Length: 219
Length: 69
Image (cartoon, rainbow over all chains, first blue to last red; front, side, top):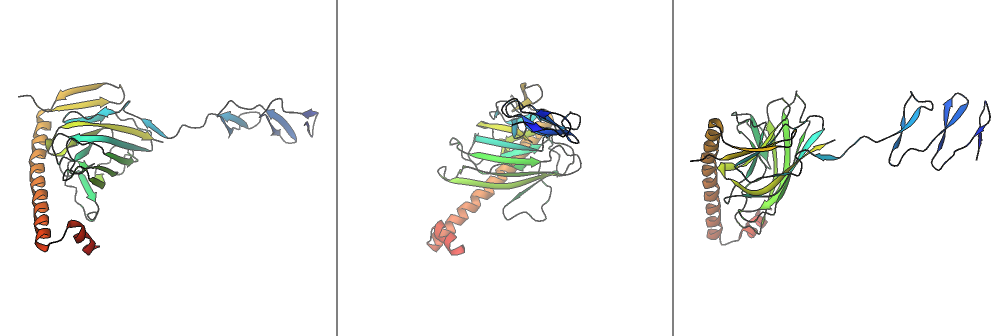
């Protein structure tokens, strides 16, 4: 149906999805439908004050393309780009070469004493920075890797706050590999520089004989 | 004798390199190993003591958890 403009003749949409919008005081115009999956966005520089635009990308981007296998003594994901809101680290089927190994995370490959602190259920108050890494898993079984862990580091590229990692997951218990070893831990790093690298290794120098780590940037 | 291997994935280039530990990394590795052996021995001693206590009391681990819940 045509719409009579206050100042001139009538206008009408020409196609499905076209919009009739105000273009000035007492004036109207047709805004042609945008391409698929674009969204209507205010833009004062256009004739109608509106435009169709591609929505900002969100979700998770895999930073270490394809994931990185854990099959050496230590594995480092380096040159982590800034610009995401947080990092999400997922490990799957990690497998220490010996029973009892637990996967550790060292931020920025910094092994300087007293810079990492670890917390876990029941031990979170007045915790010293007395570690050189923080725990991802505890007491894993060798040879039966079925576990998964999820670790988040928010504001990882902020340069004025300590870095904080929340971690939870499940692995095969080394006392009985048919049982679950649930993990809920926290890690802190008392330096304020951006996180640019993540180092993974099993405690005690136990080699990794399997597993994959995925590092995602989260918008 | 060859040293442990460090793998490094570079997110910018997509390249992966593997190299032996540096002197500093190797020293840290040895310190980590020593600490782990101590921690593991302590954990195993604790588990053994726990099992012995349960046997002495004549109850299972599940029954002990039930008592404490």
